[in-house]
Length: 169
Image (cartoon, rainbow, N blue to C red; front, side, top):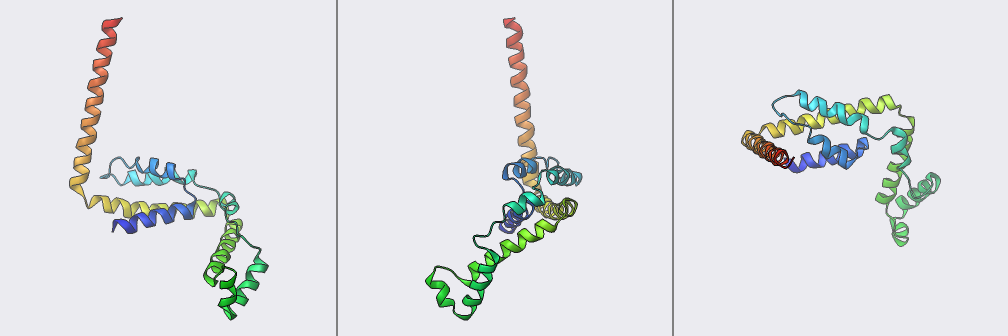
């Protein structure tokens, strides 16, 4: 449902190094939901704005060196109570290990590989999003009418302002 779609969006954003503001600004670009090319334009727009492998790798910081982490994992697997006494758990250590692995993978990834991965991830998510929105034709039609109404009022207000300016001059 919608919750899963939002969770997937946040996951894709994290995985690709997307900026929140850029992402939501870009989603506004999905202007005509009846036109599948709108989704492709979004993907083509967002991918160049995503973090590079080097930028993302620099953000993957483990709180401890790999050697210390490996030693604590051995101790923790043999005696979890010892880790608990110092406020650690095997799960927390595994999360740190995943950070180190992610940094290593990003360090080995070329910008072209990341761009291709990012493109695929965003294309898949946007397709699911688009399909979900197409399930709500009444909402889409209502929003379209609302948008037309707002634009119509703005044009009328502009014409009114232009008329007042013309009278003042």
